[in-house]
Length: 136
Picture (cartoon, one colour):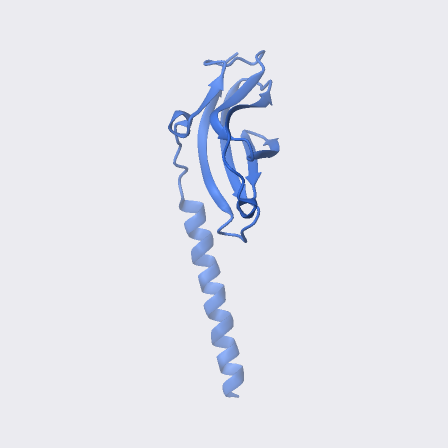
């Protein structure tokens, strides 16, 4: 009987904790960053719907490899990865990531740099979001 009561309390605790975490996630507002703070820039400066839009990363390590660019609605995810266990020297270069042509609108761009030698949540080395406005 005591075991049944303990299990009931445990299940209730997990259910309440999950509800609180979900409510906190819904109430979070996105903090937008300036890509220049991270040595990045969108080209062209004021992109239009007919432009090929690019993200330029200045002085990026050559071992940071692009693993994907995806778009879902008004959200663009850019992911790069590296393996810190390889202990490669950081040779700097400029990297240009093609985002492509986008319809007119305002987009949230999520940039994430992941260390594939680490387990989540320690695998994220850098993550931020910035706004991208595309004119007609």
